Amino acid sequence: MRLQRHGSKKRPFYFIVVADARAPRDGKFISKIGTYNPLTVPATIQLDRQRALDWLQKGAQPTDTVRRLLSFKGVLYLKHLLRGVQLGLFDDVTAMQKFETWHKEHEVQVKKRQEEHRKSRFAGRRPQAPFRRTERKPEGDAGAEA
Image 1 (tube, helix red, strand yellow):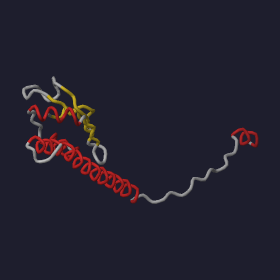
Image 2 (tube, helix red, strand yellow; image 1 turned 180 degrees about the vertical axis):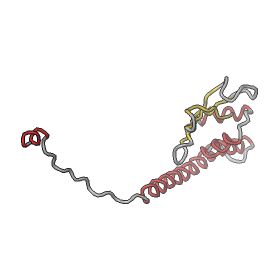
Image 3 (spheres, one colour; image 1 turned 90 degrees about the horizontal axis):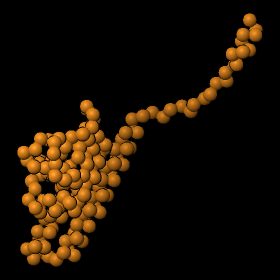
Image 4 (spheres, one colour; image 1 turned 90 degrees about the vertical axis):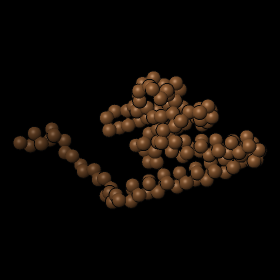
């Protein structure tokens, strides 16, 4: 699992893909499981959680960056919980309750971070004076007086 770069120069946009380790970075891939846009604050990550989890359970090895993205979206935590279910530490319902609790707390933190960024971005600006339209004299009148 790795990132496949798209977008123009100095404006990166990535697909999160499952690819053979021997394939080039932007070359052939097996499956596209999401997108990542690092230019937004916070970075925008769209991910098919179930497909990513399936590939991880099949043994796919994510790169360091993709591992961080999967962790941020909760895929690695969900894999951890499902491993606990397999070992018989707790049942599937408890695992899903734990994940839902984590997901709600995580969403609150992300919303808070977005709001702080929005406030800090507008805090440095000074209020602008209201726009006043000045009356313009028609050009035809100026030519008649001369």
